[in-house]
Length: 422
Image 1 (cartoon, helix red, strand yellow):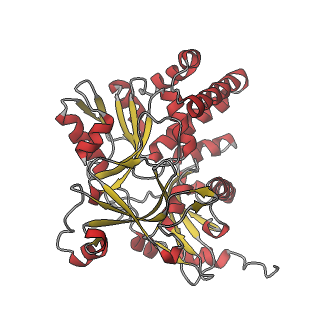
Image 2: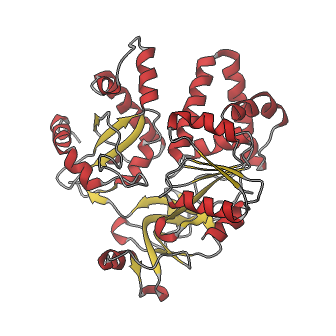
Image 3: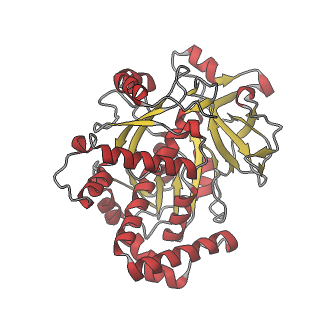
């Protein structure tokens, strides 16, 4: 897995990397091993997310593995700064961005001699990202809008990988030479075979030729096979048997729980989730993680937990707001010295976030029943300390449900019953 990943990235002794992702995270581990084997340099951040940009400026990394939540935050900050500058500066920036985006799609071209010198290089230098030669996004889907923005900003390939711990991180990765396409995770790395298996209960079949009015070459649950796939879970034979398919198509397949499709160009696109799905009372299947990944594109949202069950006709969500964003939202309205826990009680903020949820849901093509109808704002971060996430930030759903059961019940009680008009 590491060898195949390294072949795409082409690690070398001149590379510099700032390690800031958690070390239990397989993504960070694979990058670090790849760099160390090639004699590259690794620096470690100070452990404070607020100082991350200062650390980046000090180190000026050449390679950056990133989680979408970090990239979304940087994107939101830059766009907020541009909007604040307003006038001619905003107009120029938007024109530059539109031009570079056009060149990416139509000419696969990353650089623009005038706009890079005038704007983009200055912004990337202020963030410590001016030496980046490749940025790799992983661990959750990166929105196409943010991906193309970073390609324009850095004038460097921004690629997306897909995989999980059980498959030693990358199973697929998009190609650094392809800067014109978006919304997929590339093709299999050298050592991996991929099979799409029917998920008939969700309507996904390997014989499918269309997805949302776009042509495709089959849809289904993504199964992975290769020397990168793990042997078993330690002392958990039942869990191993659930995750590994040992009989079909020669056996040895890791069942990822993700649903994907092959694009007409042969790239893998993640479209749904088979694990952590549940039915609502009308019989619709809902994939919580898919929806959470969409909601996280809202600048207001730091973390979220989406809940629904077969007794309810809609979803609700527990949301930890992004402290920086909601604090500046509050001060723009003349409220200073407001704590996050006070802001979480603010009905106006709640309706603002609800509105933004509707916007990102619509932009990402979520159905009405996939958009939460009520939210509860929580000021305490979900973390390892309070038992609500794993060390790699995966939500512990059972614990979250228990902790917020009263709030969930109250949210459902507050939602007006659906209108009986047809």
